[in-house]
Image (cartoon, rainbow, N blue to C red):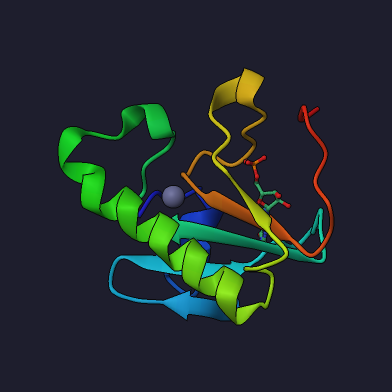
Length: 115
Ligand code: 5GP
Ligand code: ZN
């Protein structure tokens, strides 16, 4: 746990955030500033600042994040209509919280290219 990291605090229950999914490796919760009718963040409990810091043996962790997102999309009933999964990385990638997170967006038509 990184002392000043807001997502570490969420993962350890400091803010009493309601999880839409949790297991020993991951938690998922609704974004506080949703950009779509469904906007969920899937994060590892472990503090990893950016996806560029992932290592070869993190393949299971990242795979689990994606599989959980797919399951949550089904639960949220956006699976068939479609959705978008996004990892932002670094300044140009638009990353604001330095603890990796996978965005799940759905419930509306996404535009392309992204802004
Ligand atoms: P990024 O721009 O880093 O990819 O996305 C960070 C996301 O985290 C943003 O969409 C922002 O609204 C969300 N966020 C930041 N702080 C909190 C928080 O304390 N609680 C929740 N639920 N979402 C947060
Ligand atoms: Zn953290």
